[in-house]
Length: 133
Image (tube, rainbow, N blue to C red; front, side):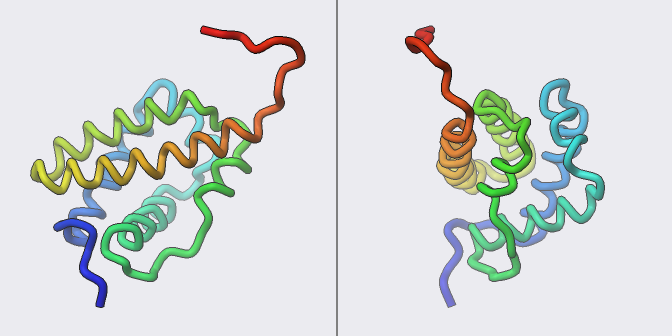
């Protein structure tokens, strides 16, 4: 049996996911994006909790492709990820003890960076010189 990445229980994972998606549904930017794609919140939360149990506890209960889901959505933008991560970090700080909150945050940021890059890569490129900001 592989030991977990850090000390967190399945119940804590379920709680973080529930609190986070409650905040997402109320968020002025993320709420409408998720509302266009999630029609069954309990099923979505169960699937995401399974994703995190797989990523943290090495349970093999998740079956899906987060990259494919985010790319297929069509309206998920790279600039959504910093908002998502800030809201997730706040949820972790409010819901977990400091050490697992920091460890989970670091993992979420690594995953989020990969998803952001994937979403960014599928966007059509503009003709002409790049816009530097």
